[in-house]
Amino acid sequence: MDSSRNIFDSHNCCIIIPTYNNRATLAGVVEDALAYTSRIIVINDGSTDGTADVLDRFTGIDILHNEVNRGKGYSLRKAFRFALEKGYDYAITIDSDGQHLVRNVPVFLKKSMEHPDALIIGSRDMNVDNVPLKSSVGKQFSNFWITVMTGLKLSDTQSGFRLYPIRRLAGTRFISSRFEFEVEVIVKSVWKGLEVETVPVEVYYAPEGERISHYRPFVDFMRISLLNVLLVTLSLFVFWPKKALAPYRNKSIRQLIHDEIYLATGSNLKIAMAIGFGVFMGIVPIWGYQLLVGFTLAHFFRLNKAIFFVAANISFPPLIPLILFASFYTGGLLLGDSGLQAFSMRDVTFDLAFTYLKQYVLGAILLALIAGTTAFFISYSVLSFWRKEK
Image (cartoon, rainbow, N blue to C red; front, side, top):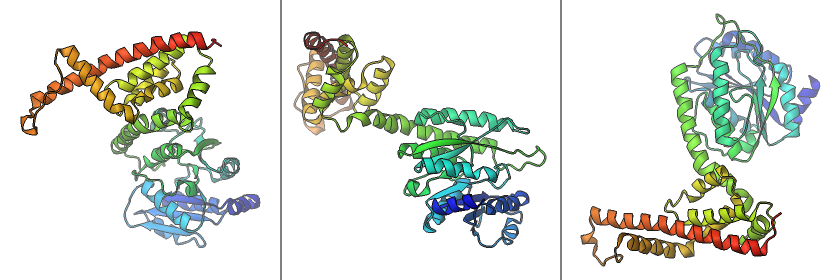
């Protein structure tokens, strides 16, 4: 116990216990925590069962109150801000219903000493009695979506027994206020560049007649589902493209060509295909989504993403006006139109705008096909002469 107290002090860590109508178990959880540290913050989330009277028995710990029930996420964020003001760098969160066993706290501290920038999640051993079916199903559901949003395969993303690097998370914008906060914080931590680690922990589920749960199946499931939709969308359009581009951002085009083409281990045919595909995607008229779609398809077809990225840069700013003009002109040739007619803004109609848009889109697609195919044949010829396959 003394060694754990010393680690709490040296690691600048506290324990946060959010509680809502758990007066029967709250005192035992606080007393167990006091055996390890006095750096305890209890946040009473508008309890109506006499929780405040239970907390009045304790001295030497910090107690926060919400006038009305605001949700677990809101309470944790409030407690995090308070902990930061107190000068803490880390916070271990423990539920007040007795589900989490405080004796597992040292494993969090040990792991945090090894990974000081990590969010650490207690992975519950569900091979115990009285595990609710919704907990097992919800755990698998949450694990799947976390993998989609971050690429991480975690064993338990719904556990509330965690160690948060609150100093590193300071300034992160969160939008959720209830149970779904614990999903959002994992995703935002990964997006922020923090590690996410797990440690094995024990868990206790009271028999069904004694168990108190504040989870509202329909309402909370809908809140989590809506959050998942938002985060999945952001991951597809922001996180994954940013992650795919990260290895290449600090390299010049010349370096990329040398490292990813000349020194590449793939065949000349595969490299030429990646170049041709990159040129195609750099011209095809889906501005804003060219790299997102291109990286996805390059991954699916097992093409070199770095080479694709280099070739797709054909649409860099100085060339964009030329590409737009060439696309429009090609569309005119395709449709038998001589090109853009002189007109005043008073002459603009929906039909005219649609005609010119169709001319541009069809021309851009045809130009992309021609340019991509040409780039493929030229690059394959050059590579066959210049580069020995490895």
